[in-house]
Length: 79
Length: 197
Image (tube, rainbow over all chains, first blue to last red; front, top):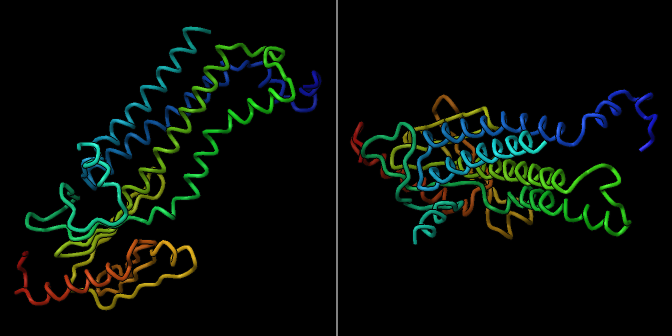
């Protein structure tokens, strides 16, 4: 990667200086919002159509949020 | 047995399904058909998700072939682990969201009415229903080689309800769906007005 690329595109220089862990944190926080939306949607879907698999879907959505928190926590602790 | 029971619900064509309930279901209302889009319509999302799953492996192989060492870019093993974990978490989320949209977008035929439940994306829900005695005309269309091979198609229902057209998109066995709806319409017409049976 050319060192002076940031002179032409300051945003590229900014991103390169952030470091991988900062980018991952940003992505994970954005993903956390998506996960919460999915969970809310599952709850709405579960009210609309109740089948045995609906409960499993709720669990899958909760697991999604928990894993996101675990990764965010892991990055914050280690880095 | 329990798992088999769970996944027997994840089919595109369920006749007289048990353990299925829906919003505003009447006490004596029975679900006759529960329909989803045929699995063949999900081939593109499945291939897309599978591609996302193997993408890091492909990138790893390519980097290995051209002998690029990630440590040269200041990426450590633990950073790589977290990057991969984040990637697979996002793929899991996308797959879950895709499955939810397929699983909960259903068409229901009961002994009283037809119901179309649509979830568009993760923030929009639309529910339309029509009593069986308001149905005027039903047609189905199987078009194209894919629909012919896998035997699925669209069922178009003209009604006298507020929503004048119901379309069951890409449902399996459209001929059986039409036949079953016609049977239920005839049974409903034979009942005294207002009776739920």
